[in-house]
Amino acid sequence: MHVVDGVLSVPVLALGGLAAVGGITLGLKQVTAEQIPRVAMLSAASFLITLIHIPIGPSSVHMVLNGIIGLLLGWAAFPVFLVGLLLDAIFLGFGGLLSLGVNLSLMALPAVAVHYLFISKLTNSQRPFLWGAFGGGLAIASTGVLAALALGYSSDAFLPAAKVVLLSHLPLVGMEAFVSGSAIALMSRVKPELFNPIPQPQKSTV
Amino acid sequence: MSAVAPRVRLLCSLIFALLTIACSRLDILTSLLFFATMLAWFARLPVIGTIKKLLVMDGFIMILLVTLPFSTPGTHWFIFAGMEASQEGGRHSAQIILTANAIMLSFLALVASMNPSDIARSLGELGCSEKIVQLLLFTIRYIETLKREFQRLRRAMKARAFRPQSNLHTWRSYGYLTGMLLIRSLDRADRVLAAMKCRGFHGSFPATKTETGLTIADGLFMLWFSLFGLTILVWQWG
Image (spheres, rainbow over the protein chains, first blue to last red):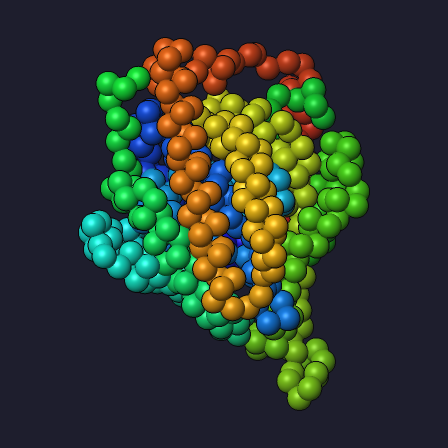
């Protein structure tokens, strides 16, 4: 998400910051030194994926796909999106500095939730498209709802803008669900061993 | 500006952001934006590119800025299409746009103008977890490599006459593109890990731990920066 500085109220910023710090700590605990390359590679890939713009009617939107990252990584989605948001700010000048925690939580909390809701369904599933689509759709929908809540709680005067944020996420939900479903279906066909929290690299081969 | 140590710049950027968000008076915010412009000037940021970046960011908050005068109750300002705009709402809009631009411009000048790997290392020097620093360094290193992979996949799609539209075929194709990119990136990660182990990787890199003392330039910069910060604090609350 790209909520900029100067918009959100201090309690919302603090809450987002706390959630972000907690999530990052939990996420880093799950990542061992050997898994750093995999997690970093997924950060780089998810940063690149957000550069794809998909036409919707006369305009276009970019994908977030926090559902896929969540399904793959669980709590480690926090550090992944942290790196992504830092790179957004450094390379593109998007987002904010003090609202970083809120922006991170908006993307990563739904991703973690989706992981715990759907990962058991997805392992050895005959219908990976379905669960991938559910996960992807739910993740981006929750991100939209949380973003609207963050705006609405900051000030009553933001309510019209919060509604616009919510409405603008609607077309995104269907699209992300379908894209996530296709991606997950392909991945579970090509690399079925992927859908453990973070696959352990094989020992003894190196 | 490049004489100042990366961690000092990072710290100053954070202090500037905190200072800006604490201020509410429009004249002070304007001078903060002016100060950020000065920093951008010192950092020799490209003028057009920087303005473009700021405009893109302003585009994100356009809806908020436009609706705010109408949704805030208060003193009458003007009437547009039967809706009454308030002066308080207009003021709030101005406050948001000044704050957002001042913070982002100072960040672009102080932090984003540095080499990305220096930023990652200075985060470590400021006490960030070693894992975060490694993640950032790896991501920065492999983003270009993966981008080439990504462009290869997209070229293959174009060669098969793929044109993005609003339909299921487009979404499915992008889904497969995403899935394939993720799979290839994980495969590459495994090869990288194997190569690292082969060279005795043990969980840390020597390069993330270099720490040098601060120079006179750093001291002068910090002094100048804190004098400015104090002035702003006194101005707002004095």
